[in-house]
Amino acid sequence: MSSDKNTSQDEISPAIPSNVDQMVLLGDARLDAVMTAVVALGSELWTTKRRMKVVERLLSEQGVSHEDIEAYQPTREETMQWNADRDRFVSALFGHLTDLPKTNGGD
Amino acid sequence: MLGRRIFLDRALKLMMSTTTLVAGSANAAKPQAAEAVESLVPAFVDYDPRGSVGRLERLGELDLESKMNFHAGFLRFLAKEIRPVIEERFNDILDDHGLDGSKDIPAEKTLALVKDDPVISMRQRSWLSNQQVMYNALESEFAENEEVYLKELDSASKVGPGRLELNPKLKIPDFARHEIHIQPGGYVGSPFAGYINYFSVNNFYDALIGANYQDQLQMGIAKKLPRPKTGKVLRVLDLGCGTGRVTFALKQQFPDAEIWGLDVAAPMLRFAHMRGVDLGIDVNFRQALASKTGFPSGFFDVVTANILFHETSGREAKAVMRETKRVLRPGGVFYPTDLPNGKQLPKRTAFANFGQWIDHKINNERWRVVWEEMDFAKSLKRVGFEVDETVEAGGFIYGKILATKPV
Image (cartoon, rainbow over all chains, first blue to last red; front, side, top):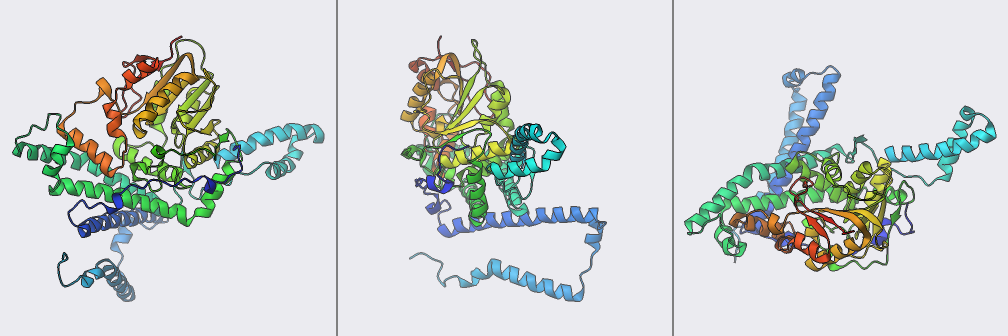
């Protein structure tokens, strides 16, 4: 046990920051940012896939097999709803492409 | 819940023995005793929503665990599949410029030649992005659930097993304030530094040695540690203990010994002690500089230091060696596990020098270059140790070194 009465928030000392946040390694800060976005997307995608594995495994224990999932045909209403969700997803990911300036950057 | 359960079980047994004398029936007394214990002892408020797998307490959410799984996989991909490709490209580029990559060519001479190679630059960028996205995910978890994690840390500090000695007056020297491995806030700038370090380093080991979720590497170090040839092992000190993995492993090897983990960073020690409480391991932690431990001379039989030296300044490294000799008893042993240097330094090729520079530049390994230019064995001899460079290495990429304080 501790011999002091401080809490964990009392013991912080300012760190000397690394300078990697400003680092440009691909010759263009935009490319560096895109690479980080791609890695983040990969992380999110794998996270979703791994959750799906968990869900499918638990479903199989409840009698819903992988084949049942493969064979499932969405209803008309579901198809419409899911397509709308897809469109929002695509827009959120790539919508910023429509916001690019008319010139290709640089002075 | 393991630590708390063990702690409460012990307290309960103690209370039961007293209560039994009064009530005359252990069974009748049990519920009352349990209630009394709960109300008397400070409680460790363990935040453990997803349980544990052996020694690993799982991250708070499945998605965060999956993200870490991805980042470990990405690191592994870079290490196993991309690294050989960029080494070949690197050497080809040098060859095109009439340079022999197998020679000890300093990074300063090769950087300009290779910096625009698409694969080499993409490797550096994607490695850095992977680390940044990983740290962001961890930081978010602890920031968004600040209350429960702080409560976990603070409540653990009030209970055992083991003691936590913090020194709020300790001035943290600059060499310990850097964001080593680009960990946001470093080891001293965030109350969650221990959590962030523990879980991010898990990914590193997953990528490079398969897995270390049960502290296998540190268990191996403690097991390989050569015992002193004279005398018993009554006290062991683990310098630069960080999150305490080696410290805990030492307790397993020396169950009857008094074990101390020492580090300059309070957040790391808070986490280490909390984990010790959770695992029910009776080790002590002290906040101090490894060069100024505050322990009496000749106090320890064994001292360890896992990956401490390459992460501290050259001057401090030498001061740590002197302090280690002071706190060891005659015949006591010092078994540091760190990157090899001196005559154990792997052959210096142009690519190795380039890798060292990259590690310095984008992984913020501040003193790796300084460390690899030192000769650990010679420095230890200069301090007065007897040095053996033929002992079994602790594992991973560590050098082989054992220093004994002369009798």
